[in-house]
Image 1 (tube, rainbow, N blue to C red):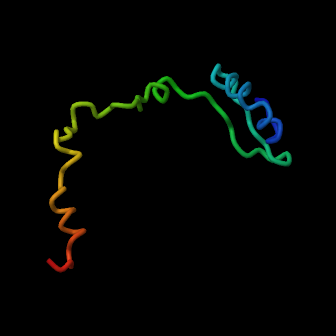
Image 2 (image 1 turned 90 degrees about the horizontal axis):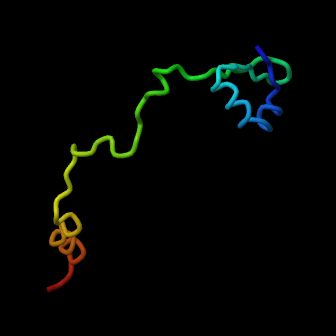
Length: 83
């Protein structure tokens, strides 16, 4: 397995990540000392679905959402004023 120093890894990160994704794992070293191993994700890890809208249909927003609590909020602003 190839060992790459951290400076070179930062310089060529995109290319290295592409290679790792294709199955060519590598080790990143700092001052010659191995620090981390970069390996491709398994099929299971790749299939984790974290897309926007994953809770569609689970939450409802009331039609009057933008005006909810208006009366109570106005009272808070006028609290303590002399009538």
